[in-house]
Image 1 (cartoon, rainbow, N blue to C red):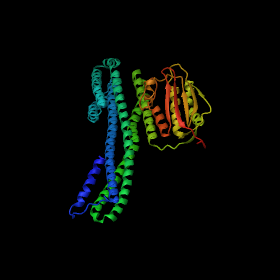
Image 2 (cartoon, one colour; image 1 turned 90 degrees about the vertical axis):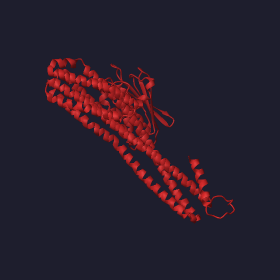
Image 3 (cartoon, helix red, strand yellow; image 1 turned 45 degrees about the vertical axis):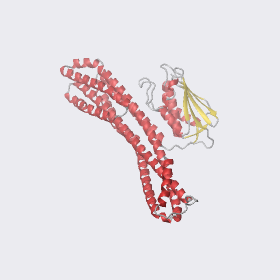
Image 4 (cartoon, rainbow, N blue to C red; image 1 turned 30 degrees about the horizontal axis):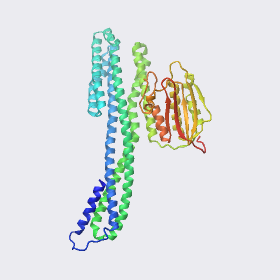
Length: 491
């Protein structure tokens, strides 16, 4: 495109200049150097402006996509809350027989399909659409099961209780939750991917903005020289100056838009966490009040459900906190300085002492560990996640035995955290460092699935790297590498 545009401009200028003049001997000197310089600079400026406009258009598209993805996640969360509200109302009516408990049930039934239609109209990804198609019959089945037990309860308590004891409703809820979790995880991955793409495009747009500004300055300089030599083209130069000013205003406007996008990205994680935490706190508070005030009146199954609600709320709170931590590591400024690995490991082990004593874990630290260039808080966050995983992922009945050691590799220092746990299949070595990837169920090994993603992101921000050498059933050997450092150690 650039070569084609250059031929067009170079071919049109001489022809226009010959119109209305007397025949004369063609000049053998060719175009003036100032004219050629101005034409080249103007062409580069136009190309840069077009490129900037394209990049800004893509930034706007990706920003809209990220916002739509967050809206989809909120709608899915609302749908999940509505289903559970319907089941809560149904359970309350079955236990008490009082029709006032059917108010949240009937309200949830009215809202459920409205939320589902909103999701269907918003989702564009084919895989997510397929998951919604899987979710619809499960919701229909759950609503049918709820309606059936409500109708049976109006006939008598035992008939409704017999249906509840079949665990059909529980199985449907578990299937619904599995599809919802799968949908939310996929949508989170889409959002993370698009957010990263948005950040990359914003950086490129900023670079092109800077290039455009430099080219604008170059055009000004060349234009002044060209005006001194080509006074006859004053009208054309005025038109060019107006174009340049308009372009500069456009660059300023687009730069302001980019600044606003960055502000919105900074507030994005907080907004999501706030929107999620409000209903989460309500859920946990009501469940806690139910457990404290009505535990003696609830059957064993009711107490178990209440316990599950509180456990799920606590897991969601931990997940939100880890998402915020991961997001902060992407945005906050990280300044590296000399940090003693000895002191960092000591602080992390002191913080983890209750867990270590609870499991009877044996921690072996190979001294000395050395000094690295790192951010103290980020390094301790990395070590805390690695030690916590080493203590947690153990076979039942096994006592954790963890070894922490380091070795010099040229300008790098590699720190090892080795354990005798359940290990990792080699095919999953890279997946475990991605957000929301879990190899085990929450019931088996609690966690949010973001810890190792935080480890990788933190090390990348500090200029380091990480990896794992492990086999299933033979323990894991996680390693991190940071550049060695000399000088005064940060305290």
